[in-house]
Image 1 (cartoon, protein in one colour):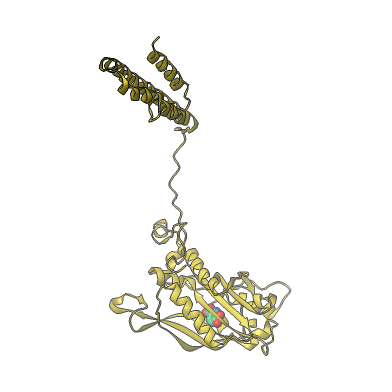
Image 2: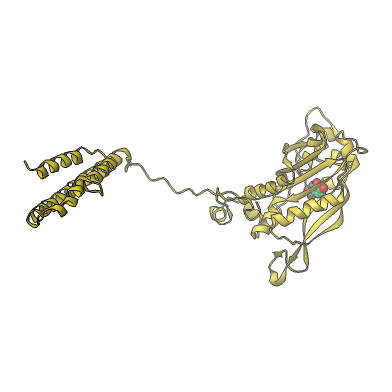
Length: 359
Ligand code: DAH
């Protein structure tokens, strides 16, 4: 056997022994690479006589072609073996029925609560919750509504039958008419400084384009020794600017009345109603957005907090209302109709960030 045949046999054996693409590449380099065995022999052609060179040159070229073909064949075998192995591993059961595409969306109320919470959390507020079934004390008395106060009727309250064995206001149980009840729970159980927001369901017997018997409110309460009306205004203006994503949103505070705050105010934000279309942050019109005020000393007293030492502010707003304004939802009732087309249109993807532009 000539040297060339011996070399071919040796190289072909190593090609066949290569078990993966990487070792095959090593074999190729050791034969045909710059410093490879075949390449080395070719470099020797220069020293040969023309006849020898011709014969040897042809033989070496043939060797090179044969080895290249062997390597290619081996590479194909290895690739299809790897593919088969993958196909074996990655089985798909074609008899399984297909999974329906996820249809769920985040309800605009959940999304809005999340967005509001993110903004208030940045200002140091934490979330508090309380019961939806309340007694008279938490819904009215502790919040400075005197017995017989017209607000008790004005609220169109859903009352339960009187509690057996109790009389008068003590016997009353009701669905809370506002989240202000949770102010009372928080002040009864936490020591100031207090900084909470309270999202939750509230109930009033009312039903039209702008009223549903159940709706949501976001309450806020801050109690410390120095908080004043300036802090209240700064906090709420900052909130509205971030929530509606209008940096220079105009705001004004009008005197108002709530039994549980003194002074009380309603906050308006700037808007335009040109052409019947509401645009927040534009024009010279005003839109009422929330109620607020400094917590009444009687409320602090009812909750066991000394009004000579502590003071603070509170606010409350309708969550559906701000969601309708932000997302252009025209009818409040549609929030609770569970119409899948509505949910698909106004709902949010599970991965959507609250207030992406601002966080
Ligand atoms: N509880 C009021 C309502 O349901 C809203 C409200 C107004 C809450 C002023 C407050 C406040 O905390 O300070 O209409």
